[in-house]
Length: 248
Ligand code: 3SL
Ligand code: MG
Image (cartoon, rainbow, N blue to C red; front, top):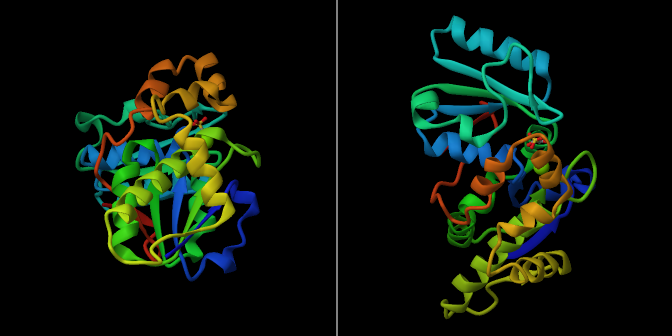
């Protein structure tokens, strides 16, 4: 199994990932939010890139009698008229269980859209890194770990989460007698080395990152604590590309 890493979504060549599984990482905060919502009983997340489309999709869902929340952010802040923002802490079980979530965010939902050409599209973050590694290792197909980045720039926290998945994959491979288990590109080796540097406290990468500092300025201190909890969940959300729906 060959593992590559795309350091920012703008570098992704959609045709090159069509034969691979893709894992989307937007640790701060879209994929952490999606993972939290689904782990707390959300019926499904519909990622939408455009705010007007998100509003229309929420109307459509409600018209069909489906319990639905409209969530999302621009500039990190909840959008006017939306039910919820993009903080994972807003999606506790009492709020989200049994409901669909229409979610639009600046980088994360765009990255999910771009990855739709992949054979399978999973959601990854620090919260579920071990579970993602297990799913990928069992599947044995080639993989592209796709870091969303922030507005076209590299984001440290996404690369560290991809690296944590790499470290977990290496643990699985070390226990497996098969030869030729992991073929890592230089990018995959780089993120593994990066994550290994944080092994004693991986959540620190959120405080070292530019977007983490921006969220602290906006008052989202608790989001950094939450998003830094490595392997809190064993769920691996997957996108149904035809329905545009993410479920477990
Ligand atoms: O860009 C995104 O998708 C968001 O996760 C960014 S924010 O953390 O909500 O600002
Ligand atoms: Mg981000």
